[in-house]
Image (spheres, rainbow, N blue to C red):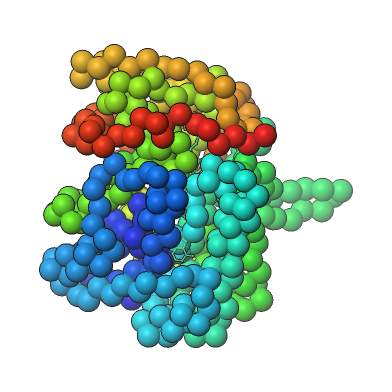
Amino acid sequence: MRILITGGDGFCGWPTALYLSRKGHDIAILDNQLRREWDRELGIASLTPIASMDERAHEWEKYAQGSFTSFDVDMRDYDALASAIAAFVPEAIVHFAEQRSAPYSMIDREHAVFTQTNNIVGTLNLLYIMKDIVPDCHLIKLGTMGEYGTPNIDIEEGYITVEYNGRTDTLPYPKQPPSMYHLSKVHDSHNIMFACRSWNLRATDLNQGVVYGVQTEETRLHPLLSNRFDYDQVFGTALNRFCVEAAADHPLTVYGSGGQTRGFINLLDTVRCIEIAALHPAKPGEFRVFNQFTEEFSVADLASKVEHVASSMGIQANISHLTNPRVESEKHYYHAAHTKLLELGLTPHLLSDQVIRDIIEMAQMNKDHIQLEHIMPTVTWS
Ligand code: NAD
Ligand code: USQ
């Protein structure tokens, strides 16, 4: 298949591009490297050294059997995006290219406006281009489990059947997102659903949980192919952060009581889920939603697991319950359906002690580059 991967220079996009390329698909990545710009803005950096987008794409061409194109294009630039899509003519577009940090979106008004403009305008441009240039192309859009929030009932995959005043309908599942970033994903979902209904486009919204891990088989092939790894308070996510904190002899930063429960997924399963969605496209006019995670954990459970594995490595990790910088429930019901990708063939890589050990070992190898001053949270919600 001809697959365009927007955000193909990022944490999920880069390993997905390599995996699908290695599977024999004709891959192009599209990314304007904004993520690297945000590193410079905040004074942070990937813990793993990463090559430039050109260098890593060039390196992969040595390994790939087929072609591997890269477009340095901003999703907000309609003309440039349209030219890239007209040149590549993809059969599927995997759309990762958004500002994905909840804390970044909550820094101040400017960062909230930027996040929503970047994400919503980029996706809207893409929808209009698909309608005009590649109407049969399958959009595989990265959404988030955070779209649903933490309701006191089971979470379904995108839709819920409701009986009201004697009538029944299947409707989009109610959304209660916890940040300006998560809200941008909700707005995207509504726009994509409208485009499928009105223009007969086909789309799969992958409501992904928090991703952990760092390298894949392909990114390990050469140092120039290495994936990025974020652990700072703005772009770092829960489990990855705890592993770095253990390696750095820093207390594990559980926000509040730690009862917050989320869906989690190994990066190895992220890339496989994208492949599954691509190989089983939505039908014309269909807006399909899959919940893309494999296990649920509370933040406190994760910290305990890391503490336990660290201890077996001779590291004494202490768990610290910080005042929660976010406005979120710390004690809540959480039970979310996630069967559709399993039914299509996903065999999950579950969270094992070995997975945690591997991340801690990676962090130990890069210990000299850990910027301790960027670990404690300073961005607050209220
Ligand atoms: P990332 O920040 O590492 O990668 C995103 C990439 O998109 C970056 O390389 C960035 O430069 C690019 N990008 C952003 N705006 C762009 C624009 N206007 N034009 C062109 N390129 C642009 O993020 P990630 O962790 O790889 O996440 C990828 C997607 O998956 C995001 O949409 C995110 O919301 C979603 N997601 C991520 C996680 C996670 O835990 N990392 C979990 C659930 C969903
Ligand atoms: N948390 C801690 N300590 C930390 C970091 C986070 O307790 O050091 C807690 C947060 O308060 C939150 C939970 O862990 O309750 C998850 O936070 P996170 O930063 O790991 O993830 P989140 O902000 O939800 O965002 C990440 C990605 C985002 C994606 C989302 C999936 O950055 O792109 O959409 O995970 S989900 O969580 O399912 O919405």
